[in-house]
Length: 548
Image (cartoon, rainbow, N blue to C red; front, side, top):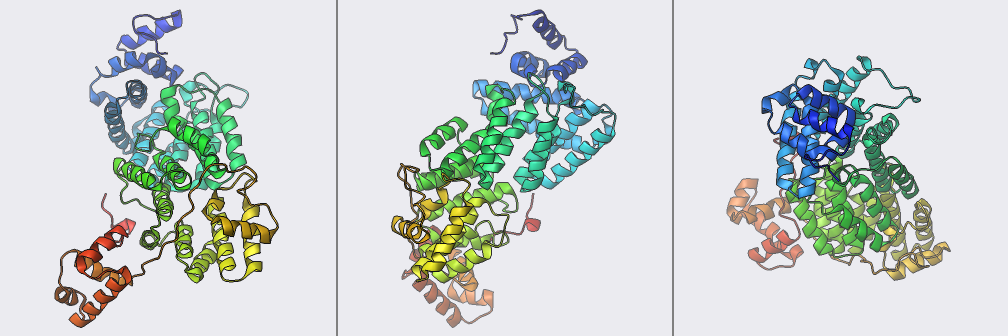
């Protein structure tokens, strides 16, 4: 519990309290160096009263003071539930951090350089400039390493003033959201090694362990994720307001593990503790993906789509960049949910829009399989299985597509081999989520052919789960897509023919084919059906053509 500003409880508390109300900025920074997160945790109101009296221009040269102010706002905003106040504080931090990034060389003291560099990294990351943020982080790291800061030997405790592991942890989070997961793992592991001991110097290490658990769970390495969760629990406690930010990775890892093991009750409890993906947490794309996975497998996929859309709207990710991890997670979540509501055509359209990446291939293959288009499903699965960097769930899912396709086309021996391959890829016997997509009868038959126990039998999964329904697909040619979009703007066949440099007869023939494929008889019905199938979404601009 925070101390009252009027009732310091010990001589050391009295000293801190006096320093905070003195108005001596050097002394306040010294106190922050000594206590780090514990200062705003225990003296949040005093820190806020002090910093709110400081002119904004002062923060331009005092990055440690800015860091203390932000943490005090995080603590107070969490306690009071004031998300608007918190967002204002974050926006100020992002703006000032961006300004720091333009003049890092002007900070001569190591503590100021570290705080300014970390603020610039966070600023770039929150603006979506992951590569720029990493360049700043690497530059700061190099200058800290080669500068006056002496490395701490392992037999000596790391002081809170050095913010041990902080920069590495922030760079790791930047690499995570940017999609460089190998680099993220290395940086988080480094942050954990650099971190100090509780009560003041452990925060970065605890956060790093949480995010290592998340990355392991995302990749499907469930036992490894559990080992990192144990490290997280041993690394030192976090106050509630900080745990919501720094511990989100661990909480999301628990959700993913529970879903993969077919345990909806544990997943529900963990999701409730995290809160919705609309909240101000940088790992919101992982939370959104975890929530979508739960709704797809065990809940209501339509509710999942509504929640995903709300999160995307809240965080400005209605048109995500699929080359980043944040964008990939959002698109995966959408595709997974669309399959469960029978919207296979929308899944294919989504995959076509983002053809430069392969993360949606699994969902496209399932869409073809569910529509009975076995050869196309097999082709996509065979192509995708050549990519070793896919998460285990994807690798297992693709082999299950192959197994089901071989079973349906009369090749039981091939079906058996593909199914056994999926079985052997499991992280453990409890790893069952990819098998939830198969119809019961076909899963039983594949298990019989492979002479193994059905993965969903034996009490592993006791709750009801959602199998994706069969659904016919609508295949339009690129030109038919263009004609359809032209019709949606109100253009006549004659004007459309002029636009594309073809005859009116050609356009009318294309329109008839569109109507046939959509199974409609007139324009209004065609546009309504096309909208529901996601066929009227504008093609995504390449990343280099975007503004902002």
